[in-house]
Image 1 (cartoon, helix red, strand yellow):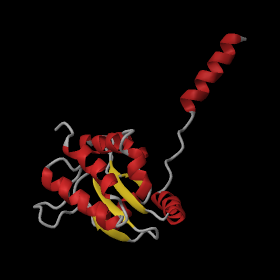
Image 2 (image 1 turned 60 degrees about the vertical axis):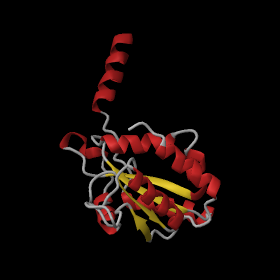
Image 3 (image 1 turned 180 degrees about the vertical axis):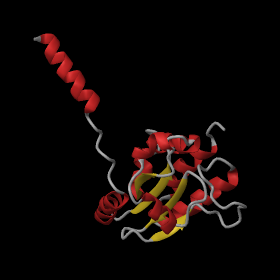
Image 4 (image 1 turned 45 degrees about the vertical axis):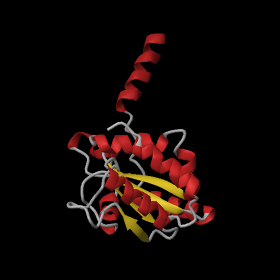
Length: 174
């Protein structure tokens, strides 16, 4: 009996199909509701599982010294795009459309700040940078642009909170 039960559990686990990730529109809809309720802007960023800089951005946003400060002013939202064939199922349906809508693609990660209605405020295309997209802000001029983006998207951000975010970017290991 135990063997039959184990075989059944094993069979069900093998044949179970993982649920598709939520669509980009569903995710943005939830984010706009949170942003409106919290009087915040939306930080929308696009990434893929194969992208090393995307992983650095994910890790940065999850840091215990960064996350609460960042989330005080922004609702962070990640949409998965441009996956390889093996990981295509990770993509959020409609995310490519959002990427185009906010000014991409210009490489990954690509980010944009939106108002609480989902309207673009500013994106990661640095006007003075050849190639445009700063990706994950690591170089001094990329960090400068990211700080300018945050100020534009959250004019009420305190100098102290901005300094926490900026300092963490400037002292990171390259």
